[in-house]
Length: 135
Image (cartoon, rainbow, N blue to C red):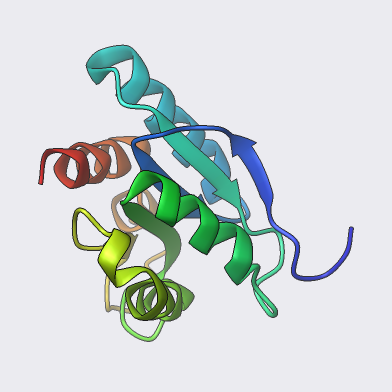
């Protein structure tokens, strides 16, 4: 696998959903729920590498869908999701139909005892997909 080359896991037209690692399973579930419950077509992208991250694939997808959701398990502040959101805002602003949405961990130390409450799940991501499309 070459560094900096993302994989489009699922083609879509309504929103670009970006994640990596274990979060991909959660995002796939959220995308399937969005399709089955609301008819929302999600383009799911697995970054695969974080540095460098594949800006071209993400930007091309956002230009097509007009929306972006980034999800990761790290805290929302100073996470890679913020860098992706800033890059998309700078380079795709006129294509965006909604603000960039981020579904991430909380700005607290990682709680091993309450991990299920901390880590973004499929329902949180589904609600963010719905919110972005309804914006």
